[in-house]
Each structure stands twice: as structure tokens, then as C-alpha cells.
Image 1 (cartoon, helix red, strand yellow):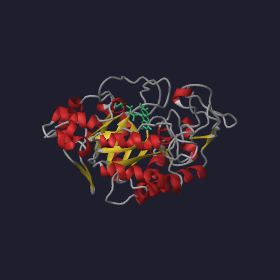
Image 2: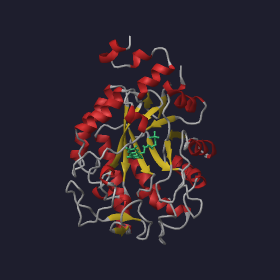
Image 3: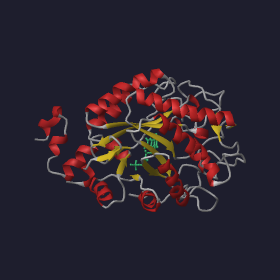
Image 4: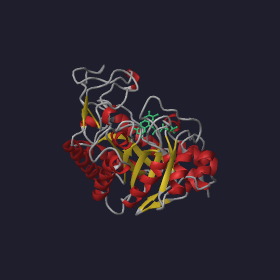
Length: 370
Ligand SMILES: Cc1cc2nc3c(=O)[nH]c(=O)nc-3n(C[C@H](O)[C@H](O)[C@H](O)COP(=O)(O)O)c2cc1C
């Protein structure tokens, strides 16, 4: 049997295969952050398409934490209720529903990518008439934005920090109500938790800035809060940027990621989903197939405590994904853009890698493959 189709058991959660839909923002909500028909079809199709885990897009734990006014949210009960049919459908297809809990920090309040991805000031609107807001940042002088002018920034106070921790905790509780099985804390790509981790963006002089221990404090506190309300039998994942790809200045790198991974394992994190970059426009990522896999491998091999890792980035072929799991380079493979091109990537992989693939197809479609 292909390693890609072996079960991954984490705590009481049985993940039917090693393929996950990587979180991908759809920017398809109204300002209420409620899922729309688009989300039901988008996430539902990938569940039909054989993904073992279907992760939502970055889902904001508070309104200020949205990248755009069109992001999915989990800051109120109505949103949790509206997500429930999606989690139920994913389960009915044999997949495991997972939610990425996110706060965009100072990369918030933007127009959608297809409208330019530009920062919107609190007194401006995007092309759909949604207003901008003041964004939260570890430091007011964080970095030049990837595009457009610097948005109005608020340096997070101690109260703001405590609110963020509460927002994550409450969002996790709501996610449970909504039927999610896995909670993933998003600490990558230059968003709030990564902004605290990286010396590129964190210039604080209090308990949340400076030393490794201080810069990682907020992420550790958020993770502990999520783990605290997430049942013992259910997994918690985190997504990290393994490195900032900024060797020319003090920044976040793989050595710090390995060190942090040990702390995360102690906090009850089950899997680290290893991405990279996103903090500064001067980054120099290598790109290409498997380009982030060495980061995942380093975390898998060098941590003192055993912790599972997910590999992501440039994974497009079933044989490539199979090799990553079979050769113990990763426990899970997350597939992003290939799942946009091919919603049935999981079924295609089954077809290419194993003999009883038709059994993986939904009964409704089976006449097409027998
Ligand atoms: C349209 C789109 C939206 C994305 N949104 C998110 C997101 O919400 N959260 C996240 O952690 N990464 C996000 N990403 C990054 C992907 O999850 C993934 O890490 C990246 O695309 C690399 O994997 P790939 O080469 O398989 O696409 C997004 C990527 C794309 C293409």
C-alpha cells in the first residue's frame, strides 16, 4: 500500500490518508465573515476529491485580524453555526475537517488580491465599499508593506495582547462547536504571531520583545490557550514560517524554529505545518518543487521531542507526495495550488499509486471509474 494512503492516527483522530488541502484564502465572504455558497462548494469539492484533511482558509479570530473585509471569521456564534454544515459534509466524505485560526496583524485591512492587495486606511473603502481599519502590530515601525502605503498601525498594548489570547481561545471553542476536529494556529507568513516571533518586525522592549523567549511568548501563550480548550483526544497543529529567508539581517531562521518546536511539543502541539517567508519584501526564497521540505525535515529530525511535521510548497505530483511520506521526510503533505487546479487531487493520487482506487471514489461517481 502506498505510504500516502496509510492512516495517520493522532490522539483519537484517525486521518484516512496523508493528503491535506493547504489553507487558502478565498476572499469570498461579506464583512460579516460568514461562509458563503462558495465555501461550501470549494471545501466540499476537495473533500469529495479525496483529501484526508480539509483545512479552511485563514479564519480570523477577531474582525481586525482579517487580511481583507472578505475573509472568513470565527469571532461569533453565527459564524460557527454557519460552518457546521461544511464540517459535517467533510466528515460524510470520510475527511477530517480542520480550521486555521488566524490574526493578520499589520498585514490586515487590504484590498483583495484581484483588486491590488493594497492597504486600506480606516477612512478609505475597498472597491466593494468595505471600510478599512487600524491594524495591530508588535511595533509601529515594523517594515515596509509588500505593496502600497503603510496602513494605520497600532502598537499592541498589554491589553491588546491579552485580548488576542482570549480571541484565539474563544475562536477555538467556537470551532469545536462548529464540528472541527483539528485546530491549526497560524503563525506564519508575516501575520501577527509571526510578527512577534521575528526580530524583523518585533522591536519591543517589554516581555514580548528582545530575547527568543520574549519573542515566542505570545505564540506560546496563544497555543496554550487553544490547547487548553481543545479536547485531549483532538489534535492541535501550528503553521510556522521555518525561516524568513533574510540572511542579511537579524531575522527568524530554522535554528529558532527547531528550538521553538520543542516548546510547542511540550505545550501539546501534535504537528508542525512548515511553510516559510512572508515577513519582508526583501526575502529570497529559493522556490521550486519541495523547496520548503528541508525546513520540515530539520524540525522533524532535530527536535528533542518527537513531533510530526507537514510538508508544503510546490507539491504537485502523487509520486512526489508519496516519496515524501515513504522516505520519512514528512508525516503529512499539504497541497495548495494543485488542489485549486485539480479538486480531485486525492482521487488522482489514488489512481496513480494504488490498485483499489475506485473504492475511494464516492459511490455516486463510481460508474465513471469501474
Ligand atoms: C489562493 C491562495 C490562498 C492562500 N491562503 C493561505 C491561508 O489562508 N493560510 C495559509 O497559511 N497559507 C495560505 N496560502 C499558502 C498555501 O497554503 C500554501 O502554503 C502555498 O500555496 C504553497 O503550497 P503550494 O505550492 O501547494 O500551492 C495561500 C495560497 C494560495 C495560492
